[in-house]
Image (cartoon, rainbow, N blue to C red):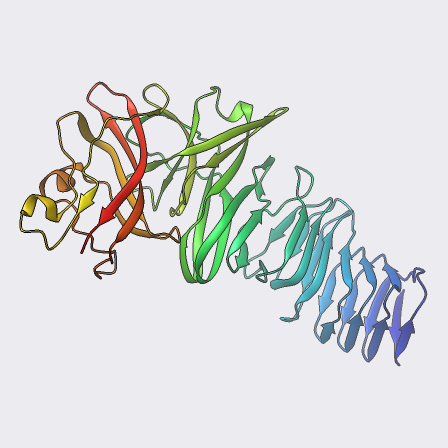
Length: 385
């Protein structure tokens, strides 16, 4: 049976309205603290203002106007299709256990709650959150199966999964200029060999993309199951694509909870691909030996003092990675070439070609010694002009 609303309907009471199919050709208004439970398809071709709670058990098809500060809860136990006609949701709740198929570009302004149910996308479907929107929940019973896009800087949580895998990922402190970032769990692992690591997790990897704006960097946190990598020496590596070299992210800590582990980077990540891996040698060790000079003066009369260089013959070219930051934590210089650092060095020139002012610049050095040991160093480079 189809229930048609031919005039304005006001809901003030917190009680359910049940109908098999609801077609709205004029106006529906759900007041603050009001509630409607609609067990089957909703087709809106009129005006639908929701300031309370609307529970939809069937498809949600919006061809008209939908807005308001209320919650739309998708509670169906079977598959539900969602078409929204470019109308954003203030608050969206995923519940009921059924698959939710987004067929349009779904945009959430304030709150996304994941309780029970998997979000999937048909061709042309997507899910994005505004800069200050929050995500609550996320589990093996409820996650985003596809790319989730979020706007802005700061903390970003990505409750992503694929198939029967739930592997959430966090960007702990995004820096950039109006960035829009998408992240997706991928299971189509290409057949590649990544130099420097004896074993790479072949079940999955995380793929990040800058949709618009500028992304500088962010420390990251990756969650994995103990069975994903059978070792307590798991590391997180990053790369821009599978054709380029991958680099090791310094690890701040690995936290364990039951069958889950969480690996947190100690530095800002800039990559597009993140993978779990095991190092070829023993775990990274902190090293007090000096491998690079730490003071430069571009105007010095002695050319030796005009640049920072790597010296000695203790390091090898493989897995060399030097990153220099400014006080705000933005990367101002980065290289993976030991040879260039030994021959030409760095003269205090930023990535954009500008000359950096006098000051102290933190750096991180990841390298490998001739005996195969992985080395990690942190310090400061002083520029004098």
